[in-house]
Amino acid sequence: TRLGWLVWLPGEPNDFHGAEDCALAKKGGWNDDTCAKFFSWICEKKPVSAPCQWTGTILRSS
Image (cartoon, rainbow, N blue to C red):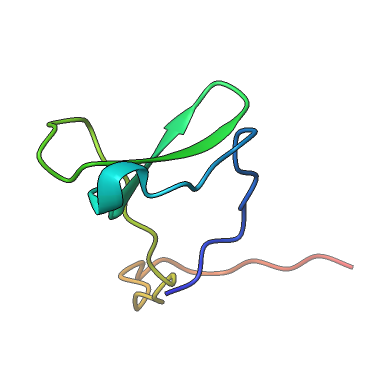
């Protein structure tokens, strides 16, 4: 899935030594890096709807 924010840091992505196949967000933009490092990650998902479980009474006044 494509990301909505693709601001690469200057000179990136550069696939340094042909070994940078992952990306990480740094202050100011994205950087490509090796996939062997351990960092926190984010996952983007489409929102889903959930049925309403509320069983109260709706009051309406005009």
